[in-house]
Image 1 (cartoon, rainbow, N blue to C red):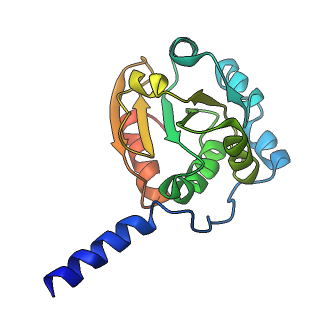
Image 2 (cartoon, helix red, strand yellow):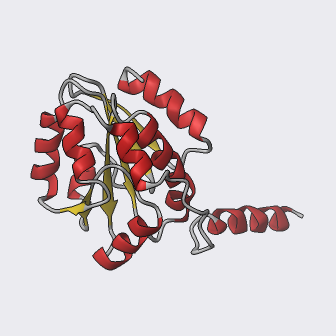
Length: 186
């Protein structure tokens, strides 16, 4: 019986890491997102102008973007196209990126992935913000997130890293709660 319980735990853990069908996108249409985010402050509008793009530049470009966003709380989500738990939680970021995007900056970090798969993932799950390519996890090191997929980091409006959540969010409500708690406003 003990071995059977261990086997069930291992199977459950592997199920989250496989390539099972991902949930359908929860994103509003591009036109609806543009309408919802119209009038965003200039630094956030600049993010929205780069919606769904994969950006290069590594850790230096990422740090520069964080500096540009001072004055606004920032939520950073590290993901990969091959990550089942990332696919599970991505719809939460799609919705909250639109709902909160006039007050909170969102950034993605696509780690240990290839551009083709990452671009396909973003076509299936479009977001209102860019993601930084991070094939060697140098960007993820900026916020101490090299082990777990996904990982979400929170910066307050002063640019201070306030919390790092490792693993997938179980619900959109929990992510929203952490944004309010650790990013400082909603």
